[in-house]
Length: 419
DNA sequence: TCTGGGGTCCTAGGACCC
DNA sequence: TCTGGGGTCCTAGGACCC
Image (cartoon, helix red, strand yellow):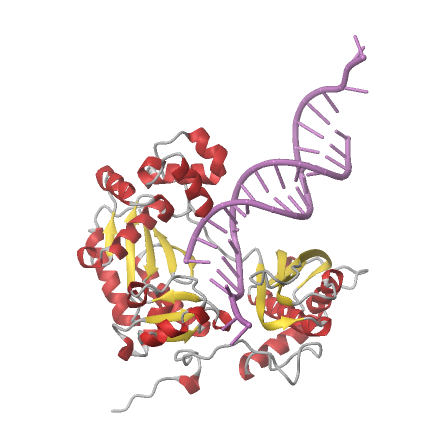
């Protein structure tokens, strides 16, 4: 049996944990730079706030309906996520963290368990210990457990947060209930193609020809079909480390000068290096991209990316910053108003399997230095030690006007209890 | 007149997820 | 004025190899 555990309206729920006065009130959480709505409490959903809505278009509406607005606080959400899944993992033998607010669990034998009761108990315990409401879906395959979870979330009174698909009748009933666009793995493009041939729910999807599915949706679609039919096809994965690491940002305003953009690209490369060192990997290649504002139809558009192969694998901030600058020089063109850039590092190898070369200029000498930099930045705050090519005085900042305290990760911001 | 067959690797782009 | 960021997997086609 698989179980999918998903936190309800996760970011909004995190904001509520230390602000019980917000229970029952509408909350939205905004993306970086306070750009778009990326999370909503149920109350905000009911009021009609759409996922991805640009915040500036809704300011009046937020005000009028007393919607509490937050900038995203990833330190808080990351920490709360760890708390939740550390606790849930005690109930199952196998866990696959799927995202910040979801994880799959698997167990071979649950014949002596009443899953409905087991799940409800977990939901209750997690809420009691962390303050985060979760939902659980049990089913014999991964995609069906996603669907079971959706049902649990949609009918909280009836399900009390847990739904189990454990026989054919329930499976078919659930599939018929699920609109095709809500099925895990079926996005906008496939929805359109499927609706064009009359497939409007998940059940009909499981009845169409394999050959059509394979041709139109590739092997991925076919696997999904089998999985929904109750044949376990999508397996548990043990994710040890990432295959790509990206740091990308929109700028607070448009930039035209090479030096301004270089400053940011260097910082992106440095952040990528830090993330690489955290997972003990070195990158063999690096990509830099640069974009104008594609929302602004009146401006000349430009978008370019470049991948460069590194002469040796590295996770040194100094080396990666240097290569990222070289890459940027190749794609930067004067005369455009740039809005976004990013650095992606790729082709990793574990740090302990690097072959150092006698002849090439490998960077083993940076290892100690980077270690020292990481230690200092951990103790004294992010980016306290920077490269000279990063900005020094005027540090550019994201717009984060509604940031909540880091209740669980900064000692100065911990809650005070008056008794 | 007539021009094989079987691979690998890389890249760009598409589709999806949260 | 203002529109996020970070991932995964798959396929087709080109270049190259023997």
